[in-house]
Amino acid sequence: MTLIMAEVKIRGNRPLLFNNFTIESIPLVKKEKKGVAGNNPDEWRSSYQVTKEGQLYLNSDYIFSCLRAGAKHTPYGRGTMEPVVSATLQVITDKLLLNRFVYDENELTKDSTEEVYIDVRPVSRRGVKNIRYRLATSVGWETRFDIIWDNSLISRNQMESICIDAGAFAGLGDGRKIGYGRFEVLDFNFLEERLNA
Image 1 (cartoon, rainbow, N blue to C red):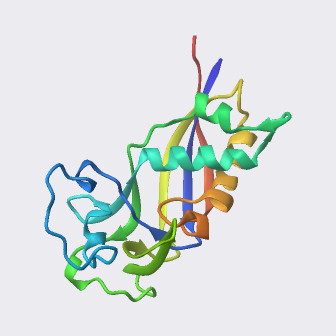
Image 2 (image 1 turned 180 degrees about the horizontal axis):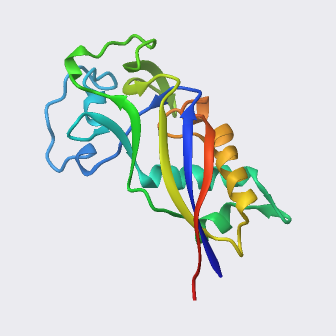
């Protein structure tokens, strides 16, 4: 078995909506909320992650899930690559650092032409209508990550196709079912190949 490592660089061709789910998302003790039920204008404040320097990032499980979802669209025998990707793929990069920053939350607006903005939209789920507030970054966001996989199960070309399909059909972040978080692969570079005994 040979393990292959590659560095992948991607650029968003659709806005990326953040919706980070943390332990604090469902507190043990009820807290007073701003706004009303289904319309909390401060909801976005706890839905994203930044470094100490204010650089936005996503956790590695976001890209793992995205690539697994993209593999549904990559043919493999009589099925798809999804179960094979789940079995062999490892995302080496812990934080997917974006080329976008939040320096001061109070300066953010709802203007979608800004690099980082507050996305406000109505959503309907099971007949319940709510207003959702999400931090978003406009088209042109970029990040890079390293992945490793067993090339006896997935060839180099197949893994590159999976990454392309993930960007075209799956996407990252919130609102993926309506086309948000889609991206293109800018670079797919092989870094290392090693035997795994």
